[in-house]
Amino acid sequence: MTAEDYPDGSTFRRIVDEAQLHAAVQRIAEGIARDYPHGYPLVVVALLKGAVVFLADLVRRLTMPLEIELVSARSYSGTQRGPVVAVQDDLSRLGLAGRHVLLLDCVLDSGHTLHSVLRSVLSCEPASVRTCVLLRKQRERAVSIEPEYVGADVPDVFLVGYGLDYKNLWRHLPYVAELPPGLAGE
Ligand code: IMP
Ligand code: MG
Image 1 (spheres, protein in one colour):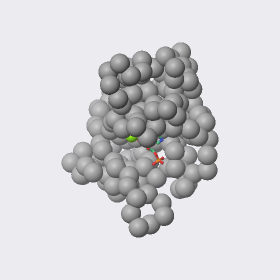
Image 2 (cartoon, protein in one colour; image 1 turned 180 degrees about the horizontal axis):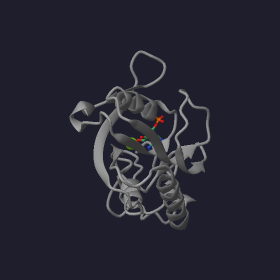
Image 3 (spheres, helix red, strand yellow; image 1 turned 60 degrees about the vertical axis):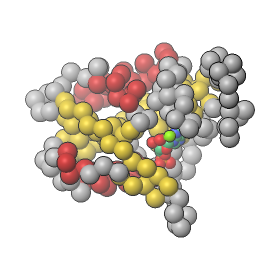
């Protein structure tokens, strides 16, 4: 793709526009404020790289004391039918034992990623863990997981923008759009 061919996003079909994203983040922040009493620091653990835009918007709407941690997880297809998700970072370095943890991801698709990272967080023996996704695809989950906080339900199509990427591109779009079929596979 040359610079001239590089689309500006104007032809991308918006699935969640900026106003809808802001409203969704606000609703999540209000839910979190209701559920967590002030007085103890929350540890917000966000999954790289997709959740960083959501994280930045969400934490600025929270008023309780909180710490931010970033972790990487990678899914890959092994010999098993479902993808295996590896938490790449050593979570024990985060010192989550006895802490109240809020785990953030940008999108819930098959459920493997959040399920696997949640298991790893639980093995650190936190005082509590809740999970939060900005977007939840409307599809059957491969594993059973119901996040406590969900921003918006979205169709089961490949999405980019607001942190979500295709081949590490398009994370910077301020809205969530369907990846145009013409760009897939390039
Ligand atoms: P899951 O493990 O199938 O639930 O997928 C969750 C992870 O896959 C997210 O953390 C994203 O990194 C990635 N992902 C899933 N769906 C999309 C999408 O439509 N666009 C971009 N990334 C996605
Ligand atoms: Mg990705």
